Image: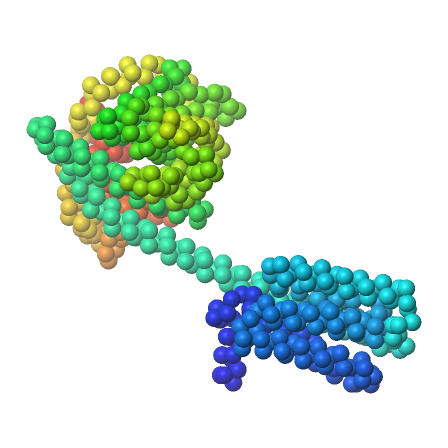
Length: 583
């Protein structure tokens, strides 16, 4: 019994054989059972030996076909033998001795055609299908024009039963094959879903493990930039900052692509300042452009609205992908960022154009420009870093926002990428002269805390001492009182005894993690911090924020690495106004 079970599993379920091989085995088994039933039926009703003989010969053909399939491992030859014998010899012969169109044989002819198209492959499938159509057509032609050559079934009861039995057997074979294919499809879908979940979990864990040390590096580097007076050291620190953010961008691209492929990417719309968005994009790439000796120009339409509503984080990512590519592939000349707009039903279309005087794109590679992990002109550009994901992600985000992206390029002259991004309006007043705004902003770029809160109390919860220390250092000039806990359990004990104004909670911690600790704080009775704002500080950028807020009760989340300005803005958002002294 165990041998039989293993053999069945090997022939129909195990992936030792490819899918087509297993389906052919199933078809052979079904046809064999059907032929045996037909033999038994023919013997019971005492049909002539000439009627039973084709059934026996077809059964022999099926056995030979199965032998070639499983012992010679030749699927195509097996299919050709079975189709040739059945469609070319047995079915036509049985058609004439079983009663022609008044029998069940035409149903088997239909089965033969489907077998050719569904089971066989390549040119063989088309050749045998045409051959079968011709043979079946000749049978019907002969039966119509020369009815005397068809052996009639005189017994109406036997004829009716024969047609009915053939119909049932053929339908059962079709049904079993299709059910089997559906089973295999669902099985494969479940395996792919499981593999995708495992991949997402792996990427989330890798992201966490990489982001945690980067958080420490960039956090301490920010303290160097704040306190250092030596311009040489400051230059080194800015290089560290640039390299760290480049590494983060690579990690984000991989995670974003994974989420897009899994259909789990979400857009989060907020009100944002268009000037801050464009200025942020400029500041992120200006050092890189200067280092390559390139001019980075901005042409911003002064009539652009000041405030828009959309996913500013993704828009910054899209623009920076284009700017970074332009700088990477431009050896001399300039990179120009233009921003204009035109009206659309929901508000405006933000039209952002990035042009360069770089290497350009070969015409034959334009069609693969947005393919995943594809890099253009790889031989000439092999020394240029990158994953080949930036443009793919940019196009995907653009389409998610119901926008579009256009490309124009000439080899050795340059390229121009234009984004059209529909956005809602938040503030219709014009942005004004961008250069004047940027000059004013530049004069205020040196760090200075934006508020003091000496009476407010913050609890930092993180299992990594360095992370706790970095947040404390970044917030020291705000004068806020800070307590620290090393895990969720210690946090629970502290919130029972002390009233806090806000908690920064790490997500992944041993024993009790941040999500569990947040749920417990929200559910504890007699807890003075039951309704306190809780901000999750996480290295996992794959979180579904809507699900997170609903299920855990946290109020916001920050993604590591977290900068001082981001921490201060978050505190300013959640601290009671009476405890804040704005500067």
